[in-house]
Image (tube, one colour):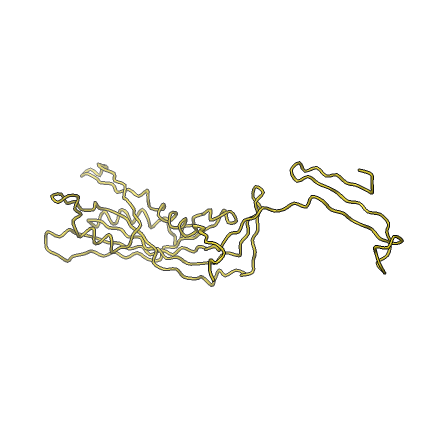
Length: 253
């Protein structure tokens, strides 16, 4: 039933995921000396993936060879999608039909569908100072939302998507012995009010190049009778050149 005509992929969710991740790919952690001078500045990497995946990598050694083991460097950011929810507060007319012609090609689709997509952003650090420094770089940008503009498709080239920060929770892992690595985890809960789109159909419009009109002096009886006929005229156009030639009987105007 669904997708019986042809498969399609508008990438509307993918574009939202890329936009969300790009909001946090320029976060840096600074190290200071006793005089409060910056001695080191490290960019915090960000990766898409669930929280459990990062926790497992942080708690286990990653073997490069049989004799060499490394651990993930901290701090680190990660994020993923948690839920998709239909948003009835932004519901639009289902019968709304959108049509637009671009460079001789006509694009059409039915109205967009509003959805709420929830994201979780994860922050992993070694100490509280690193956590607070990174949190302070994120919180001021959301009051409580930050709006991104996305080019969803040919028919929705500019779509404003508010991303709302709902809550922040921080947890410090005290379990383990003295050799266990300390880990502080912060979870940022976000809501993105976006839209998803159905299939966009394309077609090339066909131009009408010839038209004929006949005039009669009566609408009663047979209009094809010679006594009712007055005159006729028509026009012929060229879609390529845009020229129009009109005719009246045998004479060319």
